[in-house]
Amino acid sequence: MTATHDITARQQPLATEFGYRTAAAEVLAGRDLGGKTAIVTGGYSGLGLETVKALAAAGVAVTVPARRPDAATAALVNVPGVTVRQMDLGDLDSVAAFTAAVRNAGTPIDIMINAAGVMASPLSRTPQGWESQFGINHLGHFALVAGVAGQLRPGARVVAYSSTAHYLSPVLFDDINFENTPYDPWVAYGQSKTADALFAVALDARSAARDIHAFSVNPGGIMTDLQRHMPREELLRRKWIDENGDPNPLFKTPAQGAATALWAATAPELVERGGVYCEDCSIKGIVSPDHTDAIAGGVKEWAIDADAAERLFTLSVQATGLEPFAD
Image (cartoon, rainbow, N blue to C red; front, top):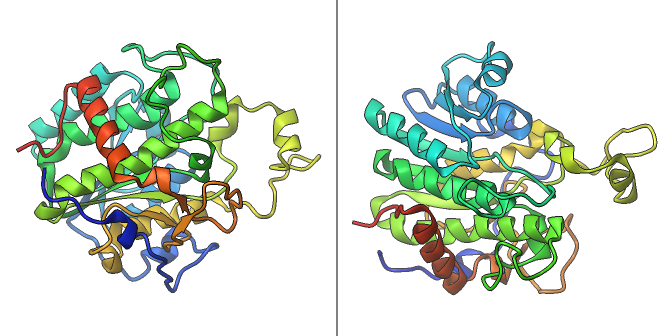
């Protein structure tokens, strides 16, 4: 592993010309990214679809891994320069087949945006036996990045989708799979989003010397297919929708939600800020353990803790049999 960096120092607030309501197209306005390539998980619905549209409009050739290739192809039919390939993030064997195809193609990769995920789902296990939210949101993406790490060229960036849901739980190393404690779908989701942020910390520590950087992002609150496991009563109770089914006006649109990941993937001011947690196209700093204000934002220390990141990285290597940037 390359020398680690002081992630706490890098996580100091950073304001930009963009903000809460910035849309994906605005982040890339005037940018010519022709000749660059990207992989975007979840790239055929919600935030992922808006991400792919913006990248394609800027000239990027995008590959979209999809559990449902037919649905992905239909959703992306009018987006130029997009390739759809079969992959199920919840099955490490499927991820391995996808990454093998990418390696065989030999195409260098400039941007990886890990936007796919599940939220607050009922208890289930992946084929490899992991609790599904941890298995899909973290381990599937870990295996994906590890499997194509050799294709990432200097200047490349990896962006992991976290969330303010990381406020709900650190990684529960003593019982990640909820085998000894009652399953709580929100705690499990929070754990997986903390894991996504920690992955960026540990990955950047290994890749920075190669001029490859990793970041995590909070896209903000957005109504997408991600809420499919939530009953209407819960959406109303949380005030995410009103009685007419309309989203809370504080929520972002999918295009606005996609903006921060695109900023993290391209912003020159982040070159010296590898591993940080971003939101609203900015960095808001570290908040206290009892902080609950999702609108004010900020990251809890457990989601950027270097020791926890290393512990999770070791666990992930053991779980997947893969280690990015091991040489």
